[in-house]
Length: 224
Image (tube, one colour):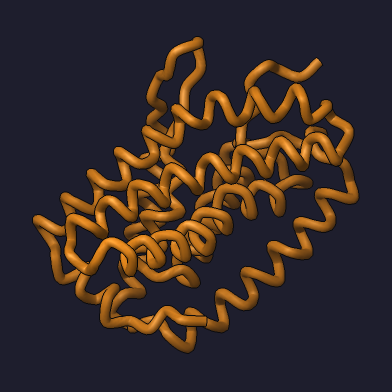
């Protein structure tokens, strides 16, 4: 029997073999393309920032925040990484973070690692960054508008990842969609708020203390 609240760090056995293999392939292709694009577009001054960002997200994910109902959430960081590094480098960073968590700390299964990287890393970095840039264009280029855009994109990235996980569980016949969807969507509405608050707080701190990092982000080409 599965728990009432499903987690994004899914263990082995939660997803069927076809789903696991399919997302290993999709994730591998996306990461290969991300490595290529990052190599072409990434400003070499931002390379050390990738390591710092990976370490920050890894450490930040160790701290859980409690939400009503006896469960908790933690930062995913995909939008934060994408805003600071660009979507391609951000995807690589998130894949490294999720991979190390699975390999070293057994936080998430190895067979389903492709699914976990896709849900927690690729959805947030590529999808979240696209939404962030769209909202920035709609709201204007001021820093306050960018913070709002980043907060909204962070919340949406968590919620969409939760919905996707529910669909994957249903396709895998692990549970039915009528069970997984309310469980994932209901709790991750709240967890997404925490993601948005942390993302905005981190970007606000960086804007106040190291605005040059944001300027470096803006100078970098990010279009596919």
